Amino acid sequence: MEKSGISRRAYLKGTGCAGAVGVSLLAGCTARGQQGDGSNTLEIVHWWTAGGEKQALQALLDGYTNKYPDVQVQNNPAPGGAGSALDTVIKNRVLNQNPPSTFQIWPGQSLAPYVQGNVLNNVGDSVWTQQVENAYLESVRNAAKPAGDYVAVPLNIHRLNNLFYNTDIVRQAGVDPQSITDPAALNDALNTVSSETNATPLAHSTQEAWTTLQLWETVFIGLHGSNAFLDLTSGNVGQHQGQIRQSLQQVKQYRTHFNEDAGSISWDQANSKVINGEAAFVQQGDWAAGQYEAAGNFGFQQQWDYVPFPGTNGVYSMVMDSFVYPKSNPSPDATEKFLTYCATVDAQRRFNPVKGSIPPRTDVPTDPFGPFLQAQIQDFKNSQSQPTTIAHGSAVVPEVKSNMEEAFAGFTESWNIDSTATRIRDAFQA
Ligand code: GAL
Image (cartoon, rainbow, N blue to C red; front, top):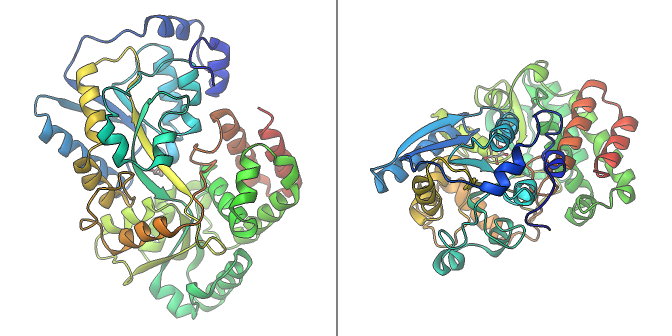
């Protein structure tokens, strides 16, 4: 991958930004890469505003300001699950050479246009000391240096392929989630919940496309395995048309079991239905468990529990978050301190137990992690495959992801298998 010198057109295209912003801004940005005036205020842009996520970020920022009392934090969220609003905010600010001190981004393919546009500082020398490198898992390290230089600092590892449930409701329905072995059997269980209780069988949000995209990719792995999924995401999409259609068909079948207001609520509002007893199941990443913890009186294995999504035992679909050091930085010193802090045991011990994620450093003590996350840590260690994801940006470049989101926005309108399968195939032509 080319590190610099990419044309502005390619950068804009790569970020899905073409047409949204005006002209020759990136060229100036690339050439100058100026630092700001050395302000001590760290402006951090992120999307963690839901229950659990907000508290986790606060725990991280508290640790940071404890360690560096001379810095202030300007906490500037761009709310919207899975970065749905952050993307545009950041692209515009980077192109206007007015970036925040740091922003949240998935390591891996999402970084590609920023790296190609040469708008991120290399943090190899400042953050990634030998000691830090040794402490991180190799796969995570690699995602932080997509073109060879470290440009990001990963903070956490989420698992995407979970099926969470409200224990009372499944008990009332007489359903044993452990015995649901594949995606089709899940539909049978949803039918049973529907006939035996008044609850919504499967809480879901279709307000934004990413939730249905992630449900589809999880079903795809459940039906066809991670190797087929990895092959698909590597671009061999034409060879998997039958499997793509079958997975779409399965999601369409689940759809009859969604809450009626799926189109007008966010992911965390859908997840709240499991908490308040309106819904039996929800498919989500384990940030959903962060929300259960934050809810209070909603205890693991008491009121809620989980299984790996049916058919995905032994799979740990990874979603990571990281922070970066944009060029033209308004607060170089505070930014470097923050990124250095994100890579520490202290930061990862404070943040992850609240967030519902596990640490990417291997030397973080497990005691602060409750039984759910300790089980995830074990599952991660024992997992046979750790695929990345389309919906959370690590498996494909942003343009492909954005095409996939468009395909799924269309799917949740029309529920048309033919046209969606075609759009998925075309999404990879980017
Ligand atoms: C993911 C992100 C998680 C969580 C989730 C819901 O993309 O990696 O940390 O925030 O979106 O918004």
